[in-house]
Structures are given as structure tokens and as C-alpha cells.
Length: 351
Image (tube, rainbow, N blue to C red):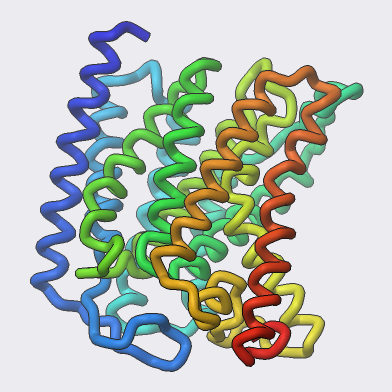
């Protein structure tokens, strides 16, 4: 990639970030309020829906990409499927921000969006494994991909409970994936990550460290869905075995927290769909850690996961599985630390 091209891309990113910031300021003025309640961390009514700026900046950027950057487009059926699905997710999530719909309605919209993406042909068709090579999985790729899309979308939504946590992790993931994709010719992933990061850059100053507005479901679900789609896209990069692991490695902190919490609550006989404050990041905050500190811990997890991805790409095929497990190590330490804090502050073993 030439220096001139890089400068053009940076210029577009800056413009989209400014556009996103303008939309976020407008949403603050609209004042769709998120009122405090027992399971939430904030203690005063705060506007929500800042994710609208992220979504609109992304869609403007994707329109420019479609019109002027054919080299970075997916084949049309995939491209239109991804955009159609992401718009559906964003619209329903924004309406949920307005009307607070039941979880079943949101889940139905997510299932529809996943079906649109998978129906366009964008699903895992084979796994390139060490020692074995490409392993075709046929029709099983459809439900596997759909389940991944749903889990990652909801994971990012569940983790969006402290200022800057979900949006910052998403931005870090985009930057790492963009860099890896660019060096391996994954131009759609490179461009899409850049557009998403630009939209988040316009939002984040309004949300961290002190929130003037929250991202809302429209932002967290949209970001989660797009990262999930990007994991599938990156999984098709030629020349990098196990490349489908790259996005999950960067999101290890998010995926581990949500997976651990769901399993723990299910084993305790709790209703896993009921709102709660039992995520590890929430227990850490309730035990006395500042919201900014918890957020930066998760940013650190994402950066560590990204660095592990760079190591992962550089390793011979036989060593990749071991490297892919490295992002789990900080999670085990974090779990021990949070449980210890919870006990010391009287929250009980799990808060």
C-alpha cells in the first residue's frame, strides 16, 4: 500500500470520526434517557443512543467503499447480506433503546440478521487445521456461524455496562484486525475495521472517562455483530491457518466474562436471560474498583490478545494452537483477583 493511499484512508477516517461526533452531539440533545436502576452502574439519568453516530458513520463509509473501492468489496451477495443484516440489527436495537422491548424481541431480530448474513453465503465452510490442512464442514458451517454471530453480538451487548468498555475493546480489535488483514490482502476486513474504528473514535470522547452519553444497544449490538462477521471474513484469509481464531483471541476478555457468567448462573439454577449484575467486570466494580480502572483492564486484555494475534500469525502451523490459548491466561488471573476482592468486601464468592 502506498503512502498516498494510507493518507487518503486516514483522511477519510478523520472525516467519518468528525461526522460520528456530530451525530453523537445531536443524540445528546435529543435526550433519549437511560434511567438508573439496581443492575446499572450509573446513578443519574444519562442520554443513550450514542451508537447511532457509530452506525451512520459506518454506513456512510461503506457506501463510499462500495462506490469507489471495488478492490476492498466482498462479492455482491456477501456484501449486501452483511450490510442488510447490520442495518437490521441497528434499527431494532435503536427501537429497543426507545421502547425497552423484551429480550425475545431482540433475540428474534438477531436471529433474522444472522440468517440474512448466512443466507448470503457468508459462513465458515472449512477449517484450516495444523497437521491436517483444510477440513470441509459442509452444511454444519451454517449453524456454527449463526451461533457464533448470536453469541458475539450478545456478548458485546452484555459487556457494555461501564463507560468506554465495549466501545474501547471494539476499537482496539478493529485496529489489530485491520493491520493483520492489510498485510495478508484481506482488504474488505481492513476497510471495514477502519470504518468501524472511525465511528467509535467519534463517540468515545463523549463516553470515557465521564459519560455524557451511552452507546446504547444500537451501538453495542451493531459493534458486536460486525466483529462477529469480521471473524468469519478474516477466517477466509489465505495463507494463515486457524485465522478464524484472530477475532476471538482479541475479544477473549469479553467472551470469557460472558461465557463464564452464563455457565456459572446456569449451574446455580438461575434464569440466564434475566438482567443481573453478576459479570466479573460488574463484580470488580461493585467491590470498589473504579469504572475507569475496570475499563482499562479490559482494554489491556484486548491489547494483549492483539499482540498474541501478531505472534500467532508469525508462528509455524504446529505452534498456533498453543499461542491461541495465551489470551486465556490473564482471564484466569483476573477471575482469581475478582473473586478475592468480592470475598474481602463482603459480596460473597461471586458477588
